[in-house]
Amino acid sequence: MFTPSYSRRRFIVGAGLTGTALATGLVSPAQAAGLKPTQTMRGGSNNYRPNAPMVDRLGTGFFVHGTVLRAGSGAPIANTRIQIWAATTLGGEREPRNHGSVLTRADGTYSLEMEQIVPNFGQPHAHLAYDDGAYKTLFLRPVMPSARDTSLQVDFVLAPA
Amino acid sequence: MAVTERSASQPNKTALVWGALALLMLAPLLIASQSPYLAYRNLAYILAGFAGIIALLLLFVQPLLAAGHLPGLRPRTSRLWHRATGSLILIAVAVHIGGLYLTSPPDTLDTLLLVAPTPFSVYGAIACYGLVITALLVTLRQRLPLRYLHWSILHNTLALLIVISTVMHALLIEGTMGPLSKWLTCGAVLLVTSWVLWDIRVRRPR
Image 1 (tube, chains in turn orange, purple):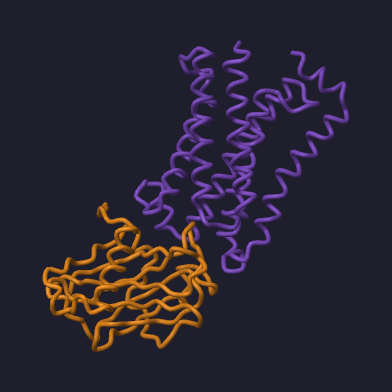
Image 2 (cartoon, one colour):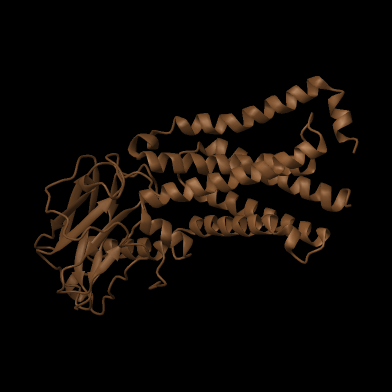
C-alpha cells in the first residue's frame, strides 16, 4: 500500500507558508519555479464516490477553500474540478448530500460552502480529490486543527500526468 | 484467602465500593449519551462508539476481579466473573469494530491493516490484536506447554499492553466521550491495572 512520508503538520506548514507568501506578494505564482507537487495523503481516497455532482453549495456555515497551482511554474489552474466530501451535521462520509464538486476560478481558487464538518473516526477532517486525468490524481485528507473551525484551506499543487 | 472474610464483615464498605463502581461505570456512559455528535451518526456508528466506551470501562473492573479485590465476592466467584468479563470485552470490541466497519469500511480496514493515517488507530489495532492473543491463550491454556506461572506472566503482560494501548487509543480520539470523564476513566483504568499488577506480581506473588 502506498504510504507517503507526508504528515499533517508538513501539509499545514507548507500550505500556510505558500498562502502567506502568495498573499503578501513575496512570491508571485510566476516566480515560484520548482514548486513541488502535493503528495496524496494516506486514507485520502476513503469513501470516495467518483464524479460527485457539480454543486453551488452543500449547506451553510462551513467553507472549504484553496488554490490549485501547477507544479514547477506555480501557474494557477483554472476551470478544474475539485471533488469534496466530509462527515458533517448531515451525516457521515458516505452520505450523498456530503459529496460535491466545484470548479476552480481563473486565478486557480475554489471554494465550497457546506454544513459544519464534525469529527469522524476520531478526527475532524475533509476529503478532497483531483481525479480528471490532465494532472496526476491527488487525494487529500486534511485534518482541522479544531473541531470548532468553520473553514478549512486546502491547496493543491498538481503535477502533469 | 482472607480478603473475602474481611470484606464480608463490613457490609457498609461493600455497598460503598459497589456503589462507587456503578457510578464510575455509568457516569461516562451518561455523559457520552449527551454528546451532540450522536445526532450526526447512524445507528451502527453510535453503537460502535458506546461499545468502545463499555470495553474501556470493563478494563477497570477486570483487574479488580482477577485479584479478588471487589468486596463480597468469593475468590472463585471473582475468577468466574473475571472470565465472563473477558468475554464481554471481546464482544464489546467485536461490536465496536463491526459498527465502525458498517460506517466506513475503508477506514476500518486501514486501521486493522495498520495503514490508517490516524495515530490512535494503531493503538486501537494493537489493543485489538493483544485481546485476540489473550483470548487464544485463555482458551488453549490447558493444551499449551506453559507452566501456570509463565502463562500468567504472559497474561499480565498482554493485559498491560491492552490497557496502555486502549488508553492511548481513547485519549487521542475526538469522539462522544466527555473530555474530563474520558481522562478520569483512562487514569482510573491505568491506576487500577498498575496497582493490581504490582499487588499480585510484586507484593504477594504466589
